[in-house]
Length: 226
Image 1 (cartoon, rainbow, N blue to C red):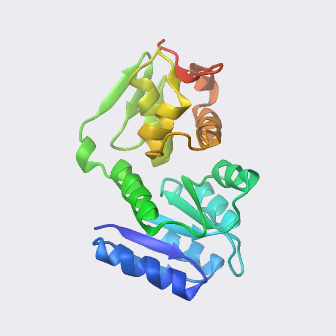
Image 2 (cartoon, rainbow, N blue to C red; image 1 turned 90 degrees about the horizontal axis):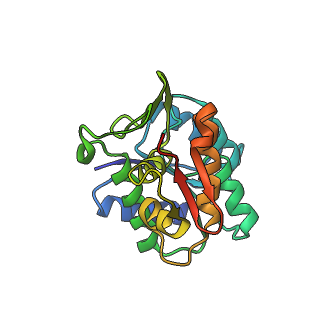
Image 3 (cartoon, one colour; image 1 turned 90 degrees about the vertical axis):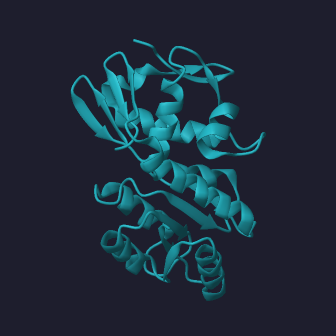
């Protein structure tokens, strides 16, 4: 069972989400206001947040940015729900810290599968004791941290999964399609800008070691094995 915060101001949509999540064994909490949602997230510390874009008092974008800026909530998976389907809107949502972006109207079954995927990546129970070392880089999959030359950096669940996937084949290129399948469980042909946006955020987190995540033109990315 996971605690899931639904920040959504459409009562019917929020109630339906809560109903389906309870049926899957989760414990949903509904908040219909952006500002209140931010406060609730900081207090509740949920396992995952479903965040609408258009909200009273604070937009979903503002809430997402505030959550990512707070160390106490920075690693909570966020799935944004919005009627804005344009590519620029999706990319913007990912760039400001969302782990996933689902446009309305959406398939409830697909959304629940995405929720399940993010919760599995967040859960340490199935990854106990996993540590991956690539040169002086040590990835602690359980605690979602990376240690580089003695300096520790906290990662979000998606960033950790992305870096882990690259590290497991260090020195070898991984295609964007492979990353979409393994990190996000997306179907073939999904938008590869999702990968590019998260790689950009990951490099920012890695600081001086950002150059270790190399772009392989026309293919995807690889983690330098050094």
